[in-house]
Image 1 (cartoon, rainbow, N blue to C red):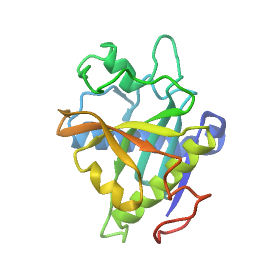
Image 2 (cartoon, rainbow, N blue to C red; image 1 turned 180 degrees about the vertical axis):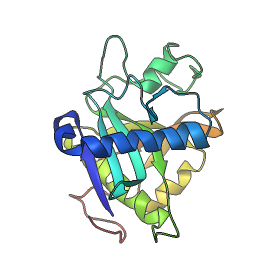
Image 3 (cartoon, rainbow, N blue to C red; image 1 turned 90 degrees about the vertical axis):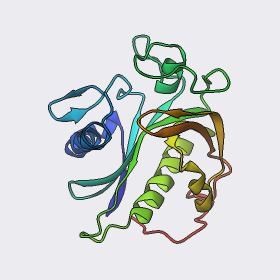
Length: 207
């Protein structure tokens, strides 16, 4: 099992893996969770899958076990910003606009993490906790290397468990029902001991 960050610059190498990520997102968010999201050719994607974004993927061959999309809050593609901000602006049908307590940030030091999913497979010996830790480490490294100091994201109500992994996380919005209870949170990238340059706070599987 390995983890990789995909960008538009690496699509020549990672195109097949990127396609499988989008197909896994379709199975996860649309087929299993019932979210009303755009889909075509068996893939789930939207306007936020654009050249500003990066995608972290935990995989074993063609089997995808975890993923997250990372987007700078300064992104602007034909009037689209990033998902949380556009929801707050009321331009995303079906998404509540009261996700945040304050105005959505627009700063080079703040990125959004979206489309987060983590899977395990007992039959294949894939431990969900290992997938989570690999995904978190690469997510923090990628965002830090890109200049991010904080991440904003919408996570399920179990998000407080992430603090057990050494993350500094705080709620920045009310609990909302989006196919289950979710909440907007902020992750302090600079304070996290999971960043590779600070060393791990626990033992995880390496690449």
